[in-house]
Image (tube, rainbow, N blue to C red; front, side, top):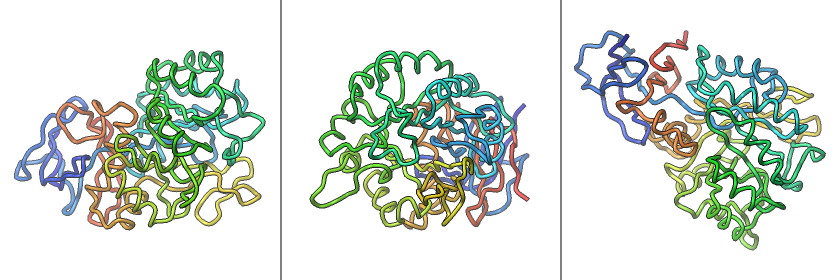
Amino acid sequence: MGCLLGPALLALGDGTSRPGCLRIADGRIEELLEPTARCDVALPEGSTVSPGLIDLHLNGSSHLWFNREPLAALEAASREVAAHGVTAFLPSVMTGPWEQMLRAATALSDCAWRETGGARPLGVHLEGPFLHPAYRRVHPQEFLLTPNPARIEAILSVWRRGRLRVTMAPEIEDADRAAAELRRRGVTLAAGHTAATYAMGNTAIESGFGILTHAFNAMPPLHHRGSSILTAYLLDPGSFCEVIADGIHVAPEYVALLYRLKGVNLILTTDAMPLVDGLVEEGGVARTKDGVIAGSRLTLDRAVRNLMAATGITLPEAVQCATWAPARALGVDEDIGLLAPGLRADLTVWDAHHCVSRVYVEGRLVYAGT
C-alpha cells in the first residue's frame, strides 16, 4: 500500500530543504518528487514535512514513571508524544532500587521498535545509578552505585532489543573499565551528573562517551577560573551535546551558544518528568517540594520552536537537532532521522505557524490536529 504525499516544503533533516512530494510504499520513503507531482494525500498550503522527531530522554508520561510502570508508561507516552511530532523515543529509567531498574529496563528493551499506534520506543536509557553524588540532583543518593563488572553484566543481560544508552559520571570508581566493556558491546555511552573537569572530559570523549547528557545541568558550570567537562564537549567537534531547551534549564543565550558551537551535533530533548512522588509543576518545570528542579514539562515541538527563537534559524535548520542529530548519536540513522529513499516514513507535518498538524509512523497517520 503506497501513497504520494504533498506538496510541501521538505525539511530533509540535515538542515536543508526543498519543495516537493514524498512517495511512500510499504512504510518506507520510496522517492522524493517535484512539487508538481499529482498527490493523493494533499497537505494544506504552507505545510512543511520533516522527519519524525526523536526524543532520546523521556522519564515517563502523564502520572506514570518508566521505573515503576514501564509498560503502562510506554503506552501512554507513545500516544502523548506523537501529538507533539515525536515518532520515536528512548524511555529513561532513573536511579532507583537496583532490581527495580533492571526489571524496568528488561520490560522496555523487550518493546523496542514495537508498533504502538503512536511513537515507537527505541530501546532503553539508564540514567544512573552510576552518578557522582555531588551532582545527583533528584537521583536518590541511597541508590547510587559504582559500575563494577557484575553490575555491568547485569545491565547487558537485560538488554534484549533496540538500543541501550547509559548515562554515567566518567570520573567515578570503576567507570573507565565499565565504559570500555559497554562500548565493546555496542552500548551508547553518555556522560552526565558528573563533577568531571575539562581534562577528564577529554578523556571521556576519547573513551567513547559520545553524548553529554543535558548540557549545563548537573555538572560544573562554565567559569573563567574553573574547569568543567562541559568545555571539553563544547570544543570537541565530533561529540554530541543534549540540551533541554525550555528556557529554564538553560537560558536562551546559552542554547544559542550551544548551537553556534555544536551545530548538527546539538540534540534537542525534553527530559520530561511525570508529576509523581509529590512533584509539582512550578515555573514551567517539575520540582520537588523543596523547589529542586526534577525535570522538564517541555514538548519536543516546542523545543524546536524555542531553538528557532533563540538563534534565528529556520525550521528546516532547527529540526535537524531533533531528527538527524539524535538518530546519529544513537546509531539508528540508517533507519530514521532523514527524508531519504529507503528510510522509514516517520514524518512530522508542520503548519505555516510551525505547529504540528499531522504525524505519520511508517506511513500510517497516528495524529491529526484539530
